[in-house]
Length: 94
Length: 374
Image 1 (cartoon, chains in turn red, orange):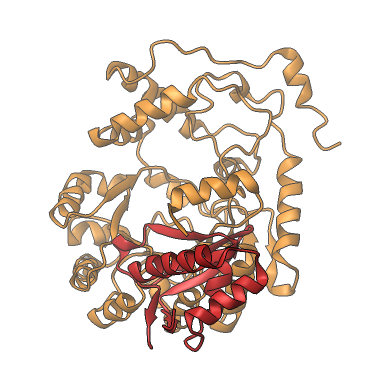
Image 2 (cartoon, one colour):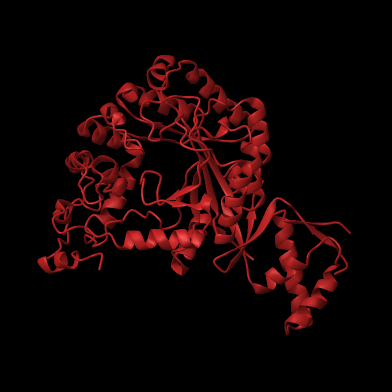
């Protein structure tokens, strides 16, 4: 949880009709056939990823905002980060 | 986080609201380097000063705020604008999925390379013919044939796969097979459309170029790849009740058109009503204005289409009615005849459903269509 992540500019975070989305904009066309939808917690984490905060700091902010069990929360954050890394939306810089 | 296809996302948004302009077309210019006989736009006849890049970017901001996801850049020829990339790349950066409709003739290697930095969601290239002679007869320039091919190859060389399409008229009807073969040789999607209507400014010259209704029906059914789609469509829709509303095509359902002068329309081929966004106002006001106008329109009781079993099949279109008759309620004989020829041919091909129970409106239903503006 000490890692620091930054966002990849090839994805744009958008809100359309109350749905929060991550839109890939600079992939090859064949990879542009899907979009990624975020729930409220995912939105919170995404908005806190800034290339400076460590994951444990984001976890602390999340626990202040929501009443979530710490172990579950860390697991959720790591799982979310793994998915973001898989699609190339974030990269670990520290 | 979950992955969802764009189609599914669109359906989900539709369930929530019908006031999100998900899919918008912007004609960035009416200028064109080709001079096609059949073009539905009054190309190269500037009516006003075109939107500049800053204005287009301002419109893009409005669209993003309103929930637009697909932005289609069309024209005229979009690449004739030297500032194309200024607003195109701006739109990409805002998270819009950009689609481009082009004649392909201005797509140089360097333009394709720049496009590949921000590849469009889709790019459609209109191919007018399979020879220089056909190009000459339609666009006024045989060189367009070579330039278009070069443009397609330039896109392919940077990994962008365009879709090819053809507007079929008398001059190129015999080229369709060759263009289809060309698309096949590049492994590209190909579609064609023989439906020609008057220009958006009312000029009826293109009508003289269109195929006969029988030819048009035949050419639409000639591509066997689409037979399954025809069958599925017919099974789902042919016995749908005839609606009371006049606008049933989906116009304004998920977006609108913006012309090069900042004028909004509900569809590319419906010249009015219009809303001038350049003179102020908001997209929300435009939407309310258009919705109010559309909702006030009803099929008139004496409209012969009300008793037609092919209503859900014929391509009934307010734009065509307006352009041919200046009346949204008037039947377009050309579309009507095509539909009847298609019915005959689809029955021969055993694609037409065996049992069709069309709901024809009763006298009571028809009475509801009166006093629609009250």
